[in-house]
Image (cartoon, rainbow, N blue to C red; front, top):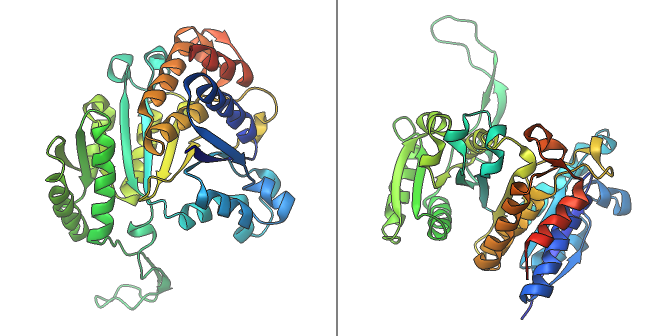
Length: 366
């Protein structure tokens, strides 16, 4: 039975980069027998323009029945003045929520040909391949109670009555176990090492996190588990990033650490991501935004979208063999010296969006 995919080009450079990922997808179907069919839908600003809703019901239904969804980007200055509740970004947040996409997978990969683009010395980052597994639907961003209220007078006589902002960090055993299993399953497809990041020396919530992750690790005897406090993890990502394989952590810590890791790779145009649920149904998208300033000019880097497709193959379709082939093709075009504008500082041959996509397809072989 063919896998069903949904393509959501979205806004800005989204249609351009998704088109190149689609070109790769078609090659995998035609040359390597990948049993897949796909359709296209609207999301973000494009959906607002067409239907007045950043996530039309038809798009959501198509995403529900698809095995996976590949998204380009949403948003742009065109829609910044409209009501916040119907801005393009609300469509992205809603589809994540509606599909229960609790596990955010953020790789930080640095192809050796781009080692000079990193802010760290090449010898520290060449060949970097980290996967950060971030819990996406719980933690302090969603904990109750939350809000801003009028403060009470201080008992020591200091000025009282000032406003107080508060958020609650909450994780249940179920949420922790679920994300931990996602991390270990991902590690089994990699180097079988998981580092759980928390703040168990200060936070009771992190004490529970560490306890549950340790318990889950017993079900994965083929994987190695270590623990690290988040402040040390941030330092180690900059000091010696290649020590990590898979990092699993909560929503807030993962938000920060994934952005630190992203900066190690030199260009945000190279970074894919995924958000998956318990059925391995996922939403895959490049980390970069819609970049409206270069939209429609054949300047965007499609490699993050193509690498997002590789993640889709590996995590939702269980076709790690084809994912490896796609990643090798990307490495090959970089080794050939092809560079889009965001990588221009690394020398090589300047190419546009379409030419880069065509080169990846050519590199796939037969």
